[in-house]
Length: 168
Image (cartoon, rainbow, N blue to C red; front, top):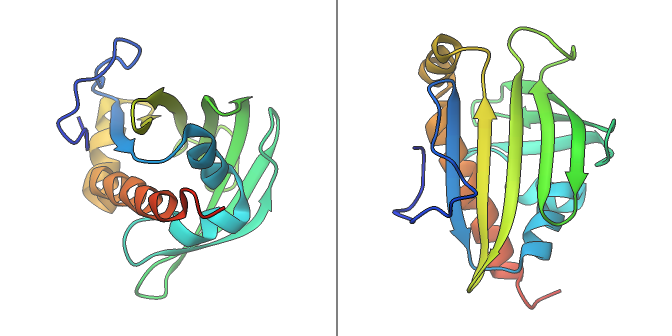
């Protein structure tokens, strides 16, 4: 499992399947703030992406049927266009979406479920990315280091919201 920080997982978070990457992190900030940071362009710009990356959001409508179009900018100057299609949004508990590049249903796209569980001292965030097959999951991790990128991204989110908790 990618990035559980040695947490005992609640029964609601099932183990990682061979076609998935599961990243779990306890964040010392209120669930509503963590959810807001994930779903508001002004917040996303401060933390989304692995270490050294920045993100520019072009469009973000967080609602069933809504779209989030953004570019991730790598430390080497490479731009990576991304698009998300939301199918389920339950504030501040859950996001479900397809993540890809430009065409809904394209072979390289993957399905994502993000849960925000209230726990003592903050939020337990679980990010589950499901790929078309275990082979695709393995290839994606080898090519773009998706497991480590997920850990870094969630760590950046934690650092961002933990610094904002109580600051408004």
